[in-house]
Image 1 (cartoon, rainbow, N blue to C red):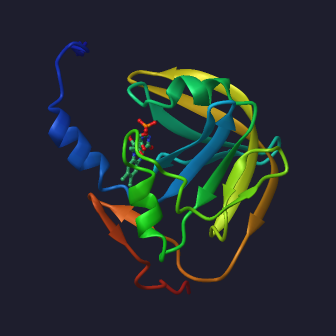
Image 2 (cartoon, helix red, strand yellow):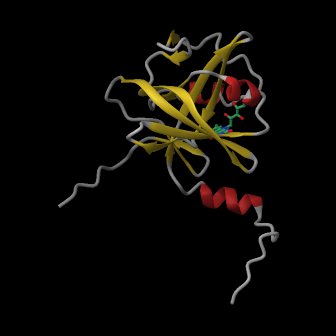
Length: 170
Ligand SMILES: Cc1cc2nc3c(=O)[nH]c(=O)nc-3n(C[C@H](O)[C@H](O)[C@H](O)COP(=O)(O)O)c2cc1C
């Protein structure tokens, strides 16, 4: 029988590079509390369940806003358009002033939402799970909206991309 040495360390850079071959969209998670609004760029977003409607994203334990996000009673997940690269960069800067020049609207749960996102999912927390050096947030979608037919912003191997070719079936 083969034994697996779970303590053998994978090279973190190689792991990151290999994981970067999985192309993703980009979202900004937004919430607010008595200190004000908070927001984080994520590409760990995924759909989970249709019934009940659940989505997930993973937050690094090192985030300044992690404790506040864990206590949030509502948050929005805003999927970015291809024209919103600057918003992705702005919300990826640790501790930066992310909201001064960001067009936001109030969500129906009182949480901030990005104005003119490709799609917005307004969520209440469903569960938080241990995810190693990340926390896995599962949210229950209570409202959603979509806007425009432009391409989404994509992330692949450390760079932003746009959609290229539609593969026709049949
Ligand atoms: C394209 C992209 C995707 C990212 N995805 C994630 C993610 O899924 N989870 C995460 O914790 N941080 C992710 N980050 C990093 C965070 O956005 C960044 O650390 C965060 O904004 C810092 O927020 P803070 O001010 O709360 O520390 C990503 C950054 C970029 C540029």
